[in-house]
Image (cartoon, rainbow, N blue to C red; front, side):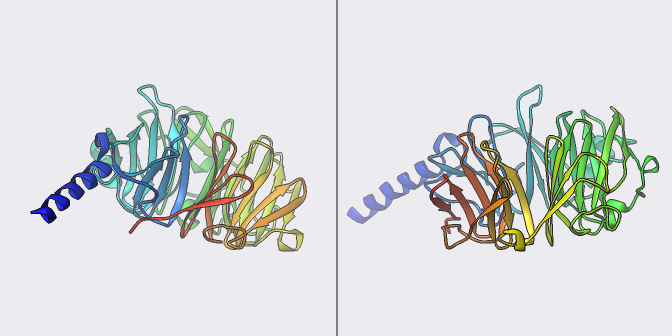
Length: 349
């Protein structure tokens, strides 16, 4: 009888810890999965993590996963971004099965809408819609246009319409983004800068509410981009930073041929294969690579690897927290860096 009582008490504790207020499965420390492809930090400070086993969040004390909401994907989330929508802020999630728009804060009962190719004909009759179901990259720009890089090409969603992309206005063709997979976006004003694998950098211009046109590409040998394989894009005012599979490129202005600087391991980078770029509140550029992280201050690099405390040297994404600290998503979990020490978080089996 005593054993039964102890077992029942333990069961009550387990239920209480894993479904408090119905807002998700809570864990004292743990991600849903260790492969962290993207991080978004909301205005309230809650961190959202896109992982291979679903989405997780962290409020500074508790970790949550959201596997009880049937509308939220539980695997293969590859990208996420925020939209300040009229009806309340929304988080866009790109996965291997389409795109989900979920109202924040996310919990087990959050409203969410799924977009995929199979649903396009009934949801948006007469419109081209989403070109593919695997969303490799996702960005909501400052005009609230949602951009999706898919295996079928580039899609854009504005309001309740999917604008036409006029490839005839630029130097692209309709299959450019299908043949050259989109890896990363960033934007400034009406221009979106798109990194591709094999096609260099593409610039798309939102010329009207219902149309998007192509602009001149940055490609070798015409421009000085490091390679045709662009793996990360970060726009800082009039300066563009491009990570590639062979070095870091800095470009100022819009003249494709001039105003370039290139950086490699010989200049101090920890590794030449770059996968993420971000800038902190002190103006330092953070570069995530397959061999660790580099911090660029002026023209000087400081490098961090597992020796200094990173959970893994394969850094996939970087986010700047509200307090200025840095989060790194890797293939083996998340590292939080306060400027001095790393705190690491991994999935709880």
